[in-house]
Image 1 (cartoon, rainbow, N blue to C red):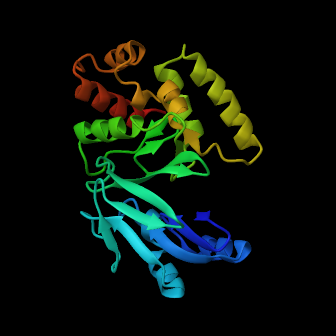
Image 2 (cartoon, rainbow, N blue to C red):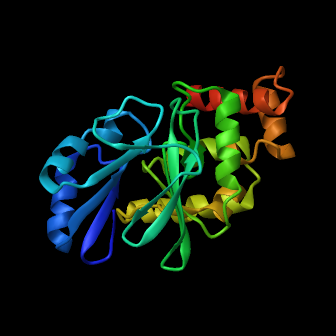
Image 3 (cartoon, rainbow, N blue to C red):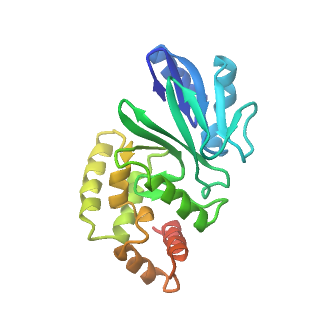
Length: 241
């Protein structure tokens, strides 16, 4: 949720009740709902929230979504809370997944990336191809260093365990793992992350690094080009215990 003390927007409300509670707690009116993709844990609360608040709903142009909504695709913009968000097409996790980027929220860029990019990881490829997901992550990685990465799930510790299997000698990754574990022990979120950090520690943004390529090829010797290396890394993560 973002709010300006009067109005609020929410992103990917899978459940309406926590949103209702937050709106009441902050004393704000829901103005807009932004959806990144069609999965019910991201859209399940939309109908109840829209009915109760009259909020306008924005979502991906090429997915089955709860109507009515304003459908958006790459490079479209939307206005809410006096902010301008640019839409980025990021297929891979789903076929029509989109992300929302604002160049300045409290003087810092902000990214709502749904299930495309996680801290230390990326989403499973349920509908898209490895080539699509690699291109989508490249598009997000090209955003400014200071961009706050607001992904949709707190999967960080599990992702970092895999990342350390890929790059055991990555010092930035080791340091981040220690800080992330401390946060979770205190029941605090690891999120948002930043793009600068993710480029240093996230193997799915580092598939062109020699250390990651070497590790992936030990898992799958047939992985040679950029896409097959990314695909093999994702498959490795899928079966990682």
